[in-house]
Image (tube, rainbow, N blue to C red; front, top):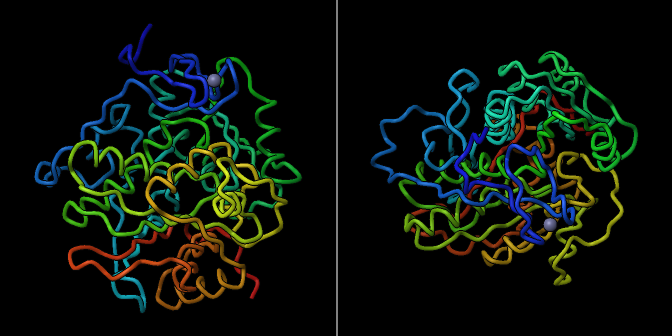
Length: 380
Ligand SMILES: [Zn+2]
C-alpha cells in the first residue's frame, strides 16, 4: 500500500537513485550514498497566519513531510529566545527545554511519526546520547520497541534516561564510529533505522529551529546562525529551512552559517580551511564536547557545501574555551551540557565575525542545544 504521495521518495545525493519511503532504506542501495527527500513541496504560511496556532513545531505542519501525530507529540518546539549575557545583538535559543532535554526532539518526533505511518515493528538508533534518548522517548510514546547503541563512555545520566523510556541499550566499546558499525551490523528486515544522520526526515524536523527563529524575529533571520557541527543535523536542517524561506520569498537573503567544531575532532573545519569538498581525515581525540566529536560525518560534503553557499565559516574551539563558556553560561543561569557551550565559546573567543549589528535583527543567534542535567559535569 502506498502511504505517501507517489512523488515523495528518498533520493541518493550522489547518483540520483530513488527509494520509496516504504523500503526503509537508510542509504543508497546502488552506491551507498546519503539520501535526501525528493518530491515534497513544503508550504510555510506567512507569520500572520501562524499567529493563532499552538506553540509547537507542528504549527509548520505544511512544511513538514508527515502529518502531526497528535498522540505522539510531547508539545515540542517554540523554545524561548532570550538575550545573551554580555553580548548585545546576540540572542540565545533555549533548545535544552525540549521534552527530552535536547534539540534532537525536533527530528525525532518527525522520524517517529513516519515510523508509525510505516507500521514498523522496531526502531534502532545509534547516538552519542541525545539523539538516542529522543528516539527512545518518542518510540515509547508511539509504542514502538527501540534499541539504542551508544558508546561505552556515554554519560550515566543519558543511559539512565534511555532505560527509563524502556529502550534496550547496547553500550559499545570504542569510538562513536564503532557504535555506528555495531548497530548497522545488527539491522534486520522490518527494522527501521531511525537515524538522525542518515534519514532526511530528521533534517526536516531540525529545520523548525530556523522556522521558529524566523517567526520569533518577526519574519526575519539574524545575520549569522552559529551552529554546532558534529554530524551536522542542525546545520543541514537550518540550511534546508533557509533555502525554503528564500524560495517562498519569505526572506530576501540567507544568513551566514558559522559552524563550530571541537578542536580535538574537526574534520569539517580542517576541510573548510583546506578548500576540500569532503571531510578531512582526522584522528579523534578526547574532548568534553563529546556530542560533536564525529570523525567521519556521513553528510560531511553536504555540510561543507551548505556553509560555503551561505558565505559562512567553520571554526574550532578548545576544551579550555568550552569550559570557560560553560561556566559563564551557568553563572548567567543557563545550565547546559559542555557540548552545548561550544557555540557560545566560539563567539566569546571572537572567532566569528558578526559584523555591525543590523538595526532590524540580531547579529547572531546561538542555540543552547542540550541540558546539563544529564551530562557528565565538567572536570574543572
Ligand atoms: Zn546512489
